[in-house]
Length: 411
Ligand SMILES: Cc1cc2nc3c(=O)[nH]c(=O)nc-3n(C[C@H](O)[C@H](O)[C@H](O)COP(=O)(O)O)c2cc1C
Image (cartoon, rainbow, N blue to C red):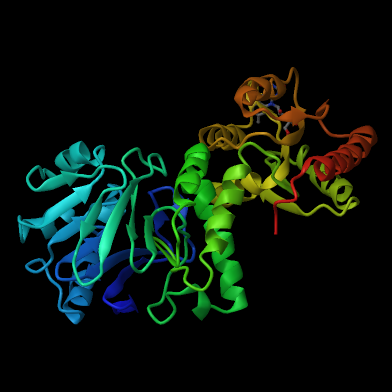
């Protein structure tokens, strides 16, 4: 990977976490993801966010710094927008090469820098809106943007060039090639890819903090922004409002209504519940509502979360297991609670052997999600004609309801 000058004396340095790894140790990234760091040069030099202490990442970032004549000895400031180790894993080692490098961070980051890196000297806690002049027409301004997605998160704005270094906000999954770091270097297919990966990134990483995203967006709305430089994914230069609007849309789905789509998630041990899946889907499709379908535990929770986040309607198909929900579905519902997949229209169907129990647990488990359920279809043993018919009907009913309820705020 090579350094890229994104505007005069401002550089993007980057590495890619390769496909096959898990992001945050949980989330699948079949197409990898980038970690971006930035350098701003005036009379003084600042590096904005670093990289993870993993594989050859520090070596790669060092060699990209060499390309532009920057190294630990001549960097004056390290700006830490966010303390998560994918950006700061290298901080302790890097800073040990030159203890004079001044660290700028939010107040809440100070104890984290001490505990994660053992660094206490030359750490400056910013005031919201504070500026730092680097000289040569480069002035950085810092904004507290708490809880997008850690409490200590801040963003850095380069006033003269109108560039926002947003760290995790406005990020997406997907490897980035140093020959195509900007939105305007992408094909339509690649744009579509990054749109999907931005949604998945949002649903996996940021969703539960949607209220704070909305607050942050309001605060940033006063800035003139020519370019958005996140710490994951591509740089938005041709049209930065695309990613801002996208994040605003994603955040709004928490309160609902989301898009006129339905996500069907189902699991079945012996095929009794499975038999109704295609009927429900036929019912939904009869109303021309798009369907996303996932089976648990086979399918990946990161993808399920993304489609569920965006859908106004959710269907759950699961049997009873040991007097409760089928465990892989209980896991999905638990994640829906953690990520606040709220305000949906929903429907559940499933088989039981003797007394049931899944339905009762589902009621309790979704209490905080503010979902409105259609009447469930539940039966003992194998499904009959009646259940098959009801499955189609409920699919259709849900689709009609979703069309009425869903927002227009979707592409
Ligand atoms: C391990 C296990 C635990 C079960 N626990 C219950 C239970 O607590 N209550 C009940 O009514 N049925 C229970 N059942 C029966 C299933 O709910 C029933 O076989 C159902 O038809 C399975 O649906 P499926 O074919 O979609 O997996 C259990 C079945 C298995 C295999």
